[in-house]
Image (cartoon, rainbow, N blue to C red; front, side):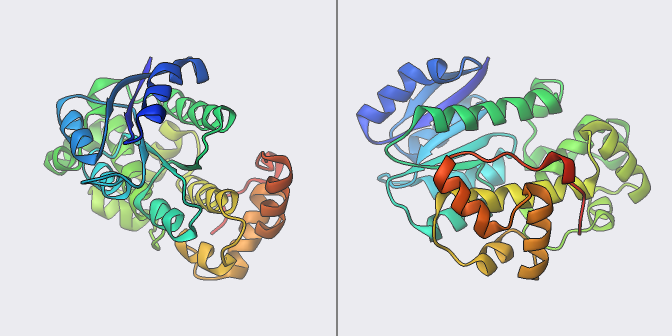
Length: 275
């Protein structure tokens, strides 16, 4: 069973998620709750959670500050942000931090189920062999010697994934990441595809495009060029081209169709690792 920490200052919402998360998705259980980021940080220091579901606006420490702390110190814990404010800048900041998804209140169980299902599938597919990898933080990663990392693909790939998820909005090449991990680029390319099930370039592309889709889904306005920049594309034209290959439609068409239907699947036949 995957565990979630609920961080919400509104008692009704907090209690609802605590009581109903497992009913919304049977692979997840709400293991603990907190009223703000300070309480959540204390709980995170004591035990591991696979997911933190947090409100953005709370007393003492809000959701964005908490998400920044989690992303920097517990990178294998996913984050879902909840907010009653449909503000584009909130979403942009959340995406840059590395938040898994972003939901507007009032919360819809179906939308939350879809996100929980995706996060559960991601964890099941990556299968990092449990507690050792789950509990690796940036501090412990820095202490792992390169010869140990090179001999343990699970740790290496987890470190690479964590780095990509923090820096995908930058121009990060396979060679640069290999140098940071102190491994040979050819070795990294081979072991990444073997362990991850997709190439390095396709993984980065997918992450960027899915983060862009999140911004498009949650905000009916927002400049396409800004979204392209936020997810690591220097050219809006190139971003639109890659997005269309992935989803089978332009970002503007995606935004309109999602607003009408509420769900869109990637165009799997056309998914290609583009640069």
